[in-house]
Image (cartoon, rainbow, N blue to C red; front, side, top):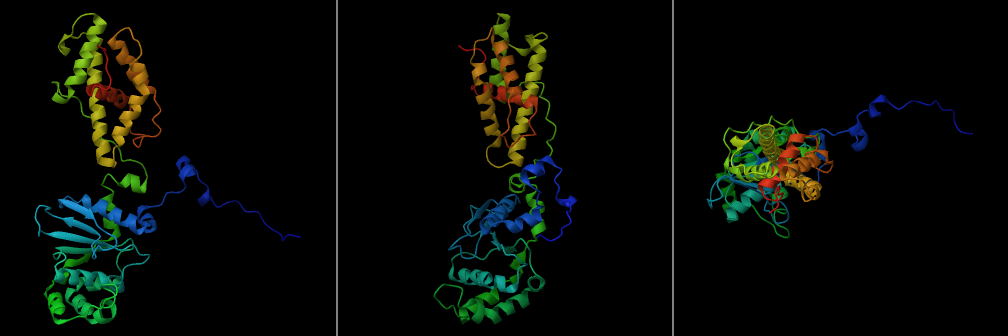
Length: 358
């Protein structure tokens, strides 16, 4: 006989009410998600953040076997062989970093700059998802004490572990080199600083989810036709001429409703250009180019069908673009009808769509 039970309803905290939560589960806030990263993902995350700082001409992720204690190397001027550079040492541990976690890394920097493997960095940052602990934070604020402690632990912590199968003693040249180093170069970057900075990059939405940021308003087209508009404008004038059965050489010759259509076409073109810039600033890779290809694939059969005139072909093609389901686009939710029309004009600008076949 089973024991007596008292059925209980599920706690309200786990009853999902958000449709997105039903599909993907509860969201994990960034400062907790970074703790779930693999060491390689953590290095990639730090690399993305460092690349966004703007003070470096070149940022390279070099972590792995044989990295000599350098995970993310940020160079101020890559054209200078011995110019200033900073090192970001990535430590993806499940606890705040302690002195024992970093002694070997500090030793690598001292030893390899003595041997000439690389020059001393301008700054050497420790970065971990749990930050640094109290003891390491105190030592970083007291560089002379930090140096003295390294010299004290060198025989036990550094000498046998610095190079596999070799003992690296603290001899006179090495000690003199360490004494010459200003230990104020050793610092740390709090994880929240990394996350707040990363949130301003185009990598954030892909790495943490939560959707894209709001899109700024699209600019209105200038009064004069810009140089990047000439081809699609020429194609539209040919389409209007095909419809009117006479040549149209300039937009000022258009009367309503063609003049109004031309105005809307330029506005939609600039909407699509604005979307291109938004995609570049908020997403990595070629999300906008992928969107363009989706729209091209969805309208090309309509565009290449028989139509009474080029103008009818324009209207049928842009109408088809407005109906497409773009469910696989990373820009989903940020694409308006005007953007879809504008992408058609971008494709015409690149001669991928033709309104009046020759």
